Image (cartoon, rainbow, N blue to C red):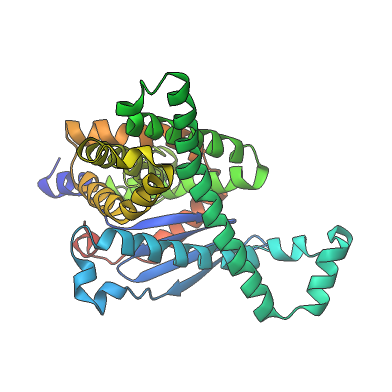
Amino acid sequence: MSDKKKEMMTHKTSVGGQALIEGIMMQGPKGAAISVRLPDGTIDTEIRQVKHIKDKIKILGWPILRGPVAFVESMIFGYQCLMLSAEKSGMEDIEMEEENMSKLDKWLNDHMSKKFMNVLTGVASVFGVLLAAVLFMYLPTVITNFFNRLCDDALTNWRALIEGVMRMIIFILYIALCSLMKDIKRTFMYHGAEHKTIFCYEHGLDLTVENVKKQSRFHPRCGTSFMFVMIIISVVVSSAISVAFPDLRDNTAIWMAIKLLILPLVMGLGYEFIKYAGRHDNVVVKILSAPGLWMQRLTTKEPDDSMIEVAITAFQSVITDNPEDDAI
């Protein structure tokens, strides 16, 4: 094998993506490509230039600080792509068919303006964030306090670790239940197509359906891995704080406030690890990435050929002819 071929086989790319409704979004040197399978069977691709706040405020591009900024930006842009894919794939039309609409749906559709509906969607998103905070931050604390009282405070010194385990269990159960939904399962199949396509490119193979199908659907730079790394880091940071300031952990309100305050730090550290994991393949990376890779057995599914075609289309739309342009 030539040196050039060996180099291509180990090429690591910064290109990443997100599974959408009947589509995939990929981000690369040329911007972001949103490829969606239309109701008529064709693939529609829209290219968008993504502007990052770190380009205007340089300090927000520094290590640790760039993590929470990138997370918020990806959440906002990802939501916009998801809504666009729902519109293009025809899902919105199906949901709004007269025979399937409830009386409330009909009234809202006839009387409410698009601006009001956008506001309503924003409010729903806020409630979604609050629900996530309750499920993954407040509930683990409540459960830990309950068992700690049953054990006469014998678990106090292990509070951060137990909360972390509870958070993982709740997260796994939540994803497992979501994966049972038909539409979510298809989205997870597109998620698998995204990972397989990126792996195919990183292995230096031609981007064909047959080559992509042979790749693994478990990728270390996945958002699922990021979530698990964040949980692990939060356990370490929370444990350090509880040991240094033991009185703080005894007050649930204060302890919840502390967990919210350290969240940007946890995001920052998690982001740096995911970037490091994308460039390295050592023992530490394998150990910390393992839970996220296992979890991808739920969040990714084997895609069909049509989904792989969408992933290839999106990927090819954002890369250049020079692999170094999109290297990590």
